[in-house]
Amino acid sequence: MEATFTPDTADQTYLIPFTLNGTHNWYRAEVRAPGALSGRDADPTLPDQLRAATSPIFISLRTPAEPTPEIALPPADTRNDHATPALGETGQFTGYADVAGHGDTAHVVAETHRDHKTSILYRRMDPHNHTTHTVELSAGSSTACSPRIAVSGDDVWVVWQDSQGREQPHQPEIFLRHSRNAGRTFEPATRLTNGRGRAIHPTLSVLAGKYPVVAWADNSTGAFDVYAQVIGLDRAPVNLSAPSKTTDPGTPATDARSPKYPASLFPAITVAADRSIMVTWQDNRFDPDPLWTGHTPAAGQTPTGTDPDNWQILASTRAAGNRSWTEPVQVSAATDTADRHPSVTTDHDGTFVVMWETKALKSSGANLSLRASRSADGGRTWSASEPVGLNPDAMSQRPRLSQDPDNSVRAVWYDTRSADWRWKVFTSRLDRRSGWTPPVQLTTLGNGTFPSIGHGFVTFTSDRAATRTQRDGTQQIYLIPTPR
Image (cartoon, rainbow, N blue to C red):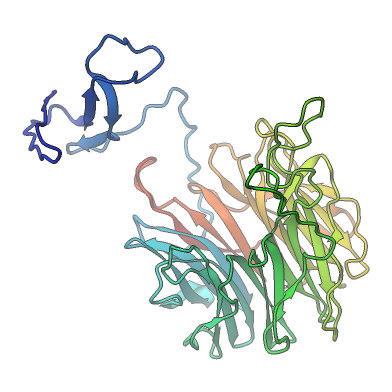
């Protein structure tokens, strides 16, 4: 069906009567007028060139439309992985969860999107997966995201970034809330940052069972740097990544690509049994042209940029009883890969373990994989990195590390190696004698992404409750115990 209207004023409304034919229908509105060509192959003599068009509106009667792809998906895995719903409602997005385990209890936080706002939700899941009430920790804000959680006994801390509903200027800050009764109630949120820049990607651990240690990335001084603060001990956050970093304001008035502000992003944190602290992050200070994929060189010069940037993993350590941090130390030190999204924990003997995702310096055609390194001397030197769960045909990403209840190191991540082509969560354990064990698939139903692990529990985001393979935005958080 087609209906054509010719306006005679600048603002007119048209009501279009139409009859739905068949089961599935779609419509769109076009604006046509004489003028410039709408495309390379358009006929320049036509008086009704296409000037604008809306996205199609799809209408189905009785039966939802089902996709018919040229290459059909394999049958979905239907095995039961015994994961338990933790947070989220059907038809809504809830994701980017974090989990902290204490005994048989799992404390879960996540970001949920509802009613045009993003909020931080907390839920405690007791033994036998009995869930308690859900707490909206960011109540009153519509722009909260990226939560992290840490637990010590009955003390629960949650940190997140939040613009407090402000969009102009877009300057999120870091907020911390504390519960002294195992998550039953929370004290008011405390703002940790000063609002002069963008504070993002917070991470959290606990020192001596009572001092939350928070790290985040912040560009209040120009470049994104990683800051850390031991709440209750430090009077102010410390910039960990600035030492040995060179920035250059350039001459943006004449060359928009001349400024150089190497970025330090996505920090991760752990506290060892001896109360030493390590923060690790990704950093592109070693790239010849950081944050650019290359620039047009002067005549006779060779392009110096990389695509993507040469991200490397760095770390800084604070010894037990000390208030100072070491200068950044290279962990990955690879010049031919982009190393990103690190995670860190300690082994039972105090060895620091860092894992990250890596890919060749190619903008496309290169799969992500995982590598790990260890330091037995407090972060001063690092072992040569080794692959974890390597499958050249899979895309493995976003690793997270934690100690199991027996104090062994376990990793979780998500990748594409499953037989049904869906994203699944996999795990591997560090054996001190033989290294990382072969990967084991943890999830089966639907897609499983962005896992987190905390002392015997794993959370992940999944669309397994969606009723359709397309146009169903259901993403929820599920909880599963680590293999015993």
